[in-house]
Image (cartoon, rainbow over all chains, first blue to last red; front, top):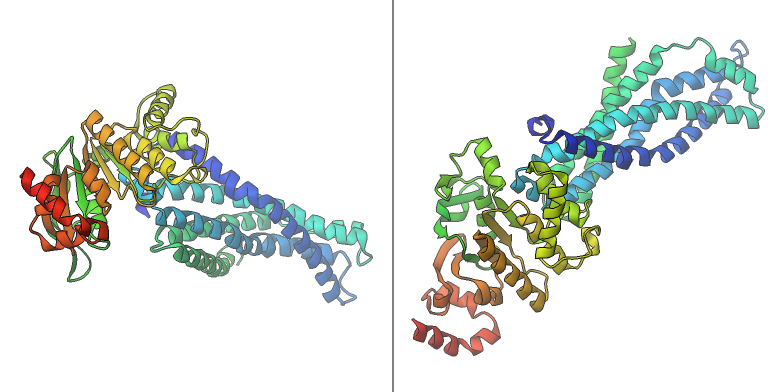
Length: 233
Length: 259
């Protein structure tokens, strides 16, 4: 842990590595994030409409519930669970492969702080970029709901948009972004841990990758409970 | 010169993998550690370079005790070490020239232009041209070994360690890699230690041989005394193949005559 978070040996190299990781881990996850969020928002709108049968509730409630559900849980927790599978397994398998092919030993012999060189840029990249993905997810999720309103007759677009804007609590966005940053840290650090300490061959790399995803998912759910208790109540 | 003093290493309690090994590796010479698979050669090499911590004993690099070194001194020592791994250990995500540039980017104060020039010189020195922008996976095993050697010598090391440099290579390529290591050792007056169980390599380039058997140093001496060692374990190792058994009498009488 100390080795990982110590000062980088060469700042220039560290910045360059972090930018590469943002591209490799973050930007490459953008497309799939948008697709998932679009469908998530669409399904959420349909489900909300189907489950609100109380005539006392106004129609725009669909937009409001869709927005708040996306902001509070879906765009941070569900998206991060998804990214734990995508980014987490990628990190664990990449570092694990470097370990078993002696690339990490080669760095250690050169005197390079391998934990710092390999892991810290990934953590920084993921913690910086996942909140950005969450912002994209928020907009795309709401767009998904809007498209359902536009192409079906379950709710009018004007009422849906009114619901999206009604009683907007700004803190929910910050809350979501804080959660995303914490989840991102969990994804990068836990996956890197499993990858870095792989022993054996390619089979163990696969096992480490699976363990990384499972551990990340459990810790994300646990952290979600704790953060919700701390930040919302 | 590297001195190994009474080195012991275990991974499980009371099961020593290396048992009180002491030897000296001289500079400007090809020192070889030989032995059967699982005898402890690689563990010894990794203990010498500091990848494994010692249970007891010491390693002296030109009189400097490795165990007594401060973190800063160890870092300084690392810049004097070049290592060629069994599987080359080139960084997959970097091109060949980036691999060779890597140690310089991390430790050298040279300008970018000087670093580029040095990387190109090292690659050309090991016979690699026109592959600078290729990735390791695009090269053959022999070319990967050459690239790994280029990376190992990029910081002008005083000590070169090679872990089974010939494994997975055809005999011709293997002998070329051996020749290259010999040339570089003489050219830069390095202390070179090669870990191998390839007898062809031992006979062609080895100068000072250390034979490890079940974690113990069973024999040590010059190549010229290899066939007349009076060490039964070494004889079993050398004459394991049918070809060497066939020429055993000739080889032994030749070396006896030389002595």
